[in-house]
Amino acid sequence: MFDPAMTGQEQSRRRGGCRRAALIAGVVIAGLVVIIVIIALAAGSGQGDKTGTAPASSSPAKAAGTASPPPSPAAVPSPDGTFQGSCDYTLGDSPATGTAAAVGDIDAKNTGNIGIVVKLTITWPQEGYAPLTMSKTVRIPSGGEQDPQFHRPLSYDQITRLQSYQAGHGYADGCTYHGEITGTFGRAR
Image (cartoon, rainbow, N blue to C red; front, top):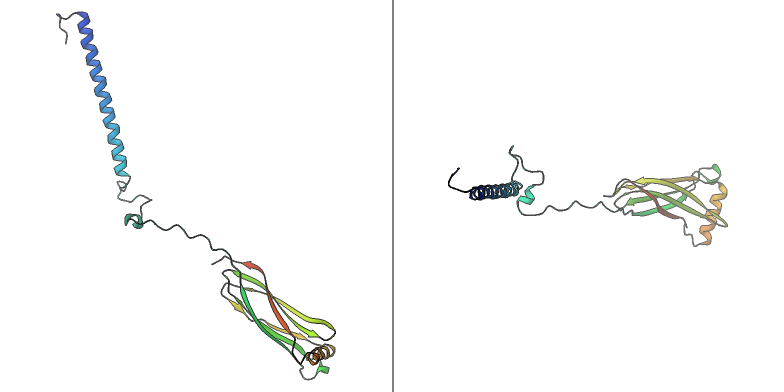
């Protein structure tokens, strides 16, 4: 208020003091508002939104105080297998009729954690000549098995050389089988 008894200088000082007090009060109020907002945000971050839904980051495991386990890493491919076989030959009606055959099978099992491509090979020895060979390629899923059959017609000369090999080696059949993993397919389990 205006007091005529006050000098101009006193009135100026009084107005400056009021302005200062108003400025200080404004700063204090603004500071309190900032503090209240910070507290509300901190308290609200653990609560759901006003629609009653929980925030996306909450889970029963976190609510119980336990951390959820990290996602499992992808399995490392580990191709593996076992190969058990047998081989022989049959004369058929007679060697001269062309019904003789080299025969065999290989039981191939996939013991790895990924599908495998396997080249299976059987060889039958011949005295004085390269062995007779037959191969098959098979695809076996993880945990699976196959038992491919081998059948190769033999000529009279091939039968004769096969029997000559056996006679010269204590009548051992001499045939061999082999499995070789040449590739993989699918995803590791």
